[in-house]
Image 1: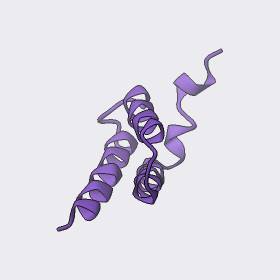
Image 2: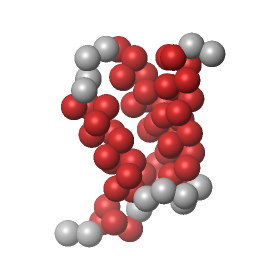
Image 3: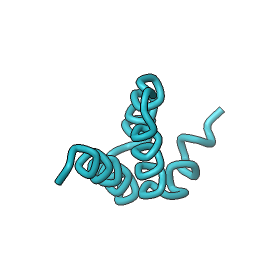
Image 4: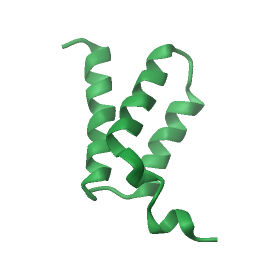
Length: 68
């Protein structure tokens, strides 16, 4: 398995962990912020896509996101 495949699988796994409530929203947001801060290759965008795709709408519709 190549590094890219491993990285994309890991990003998808993080999204899956969140969607199954094994990690919290803050952890996912931290992962996303690291990927965005270090954005230097198209592969980072693929990783962000994989993470968001697997976290699904739950990431945006949690109780924490509705707090003012």
